[in-house]
Image 1 (cartoon, helix red, strand yellow):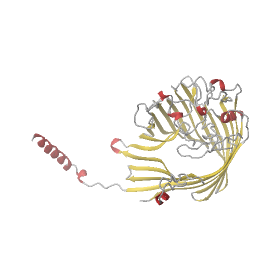
Image 2: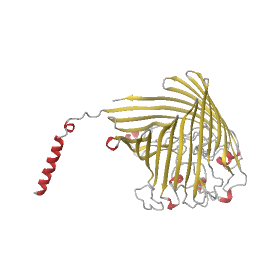
Image 3: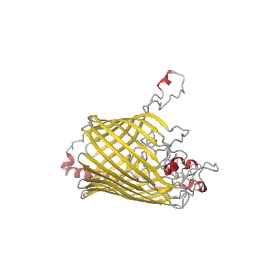
Image 4: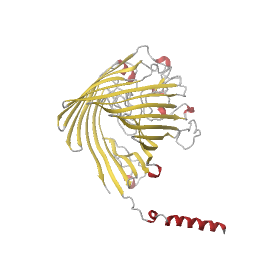
Length: 503
């Protein structure tokens, strides 16, 4: 009986409070449902030559490859009023022309098998899928939960799609974003315990990114922390579980910290953007050699590195003159001492040249090699062990025609040495590096011609020519027996659209 009396009293109090609140009685106007679409279609045709400098490897990528690829990317935003929306970005029909992405399996003898796996060149890949909402009750704090973009600065340190939680908050004229990403579950299971010989513990990424304006400059200071607790099986997510190759002789990253500052602004007519960052961490895997495929670094357990980047542009009449300087740390000895670290994880979208470090391939968003930094040639990405200086110019030939040309001189920050598997154990041991050394990575000239065929439709012809130095030959092949110059021509058609309101 007493329980019922309590329930009745609670109902009465709530009803009285509701009656005293006229706003609660009024039916608020329901938020409106809306759907907007944006995206692009892109075709690329390539001829790539001497990306192994004439070594002619026996594999799926060679020293002369001509091919075409396409991609239709669609981003949809389903909003319920101004404060909540679901975002999805999907890649449709991404494929290499002439390659069947899904063969029929022929598991069944009947006619139903004719409808099986018919997605030839039409696979679907989901890049992003998350919900974003602005919580007024929490001081207009924005939350994002799902698979989304993780990026810092100019994409030198972090550029990936991750399963994440983000919290963003405006702080006066500044904004802060905190991010947690589950990088790796540790094994093909949910347990943190060992699964056979595999350590099941996870890898996580945390970062906070600030954005604000000081004078004429937009500033983005950031801090990041990465930890991989599953190293006791002598492997780590970076680099063992990436399922594609980076450059050779990379450390096992068990922890990494990053402090950086990116900026973008103007001094008079001079436009400047750039970044400075410092990285440090630990490698708790005690490697004694490189392991198969020259994958790993041997070090004393300490990791350290940095990136410096500056891009300047100055209009002179109708022409724009530019200069790019970049410098990233390297490892002077891949078999001892400290290990080098320039990044946590990137997809290769930082652009300086057409051939040297352009590097998209079978990462999350790419499928083909687009430079010496690809997992095929295994050159450097971004500014890893690279010091470069580029001069460039952009000429508006007509209202609908624009030409960009550049020349780049590239050196290794730390010298590279020849290497070979002399004892045939499928690994590079400390004694299998030669005494010769070089810092000369090479020189490159590039061009990019953009023709605006009509609104939102651009045809591009682009390419480059790279003269390798001895350091580049050591990096890609381990020796300088082959030294042919690398070159590429690429034609590109891009149709972009946005702001399409469906409902």
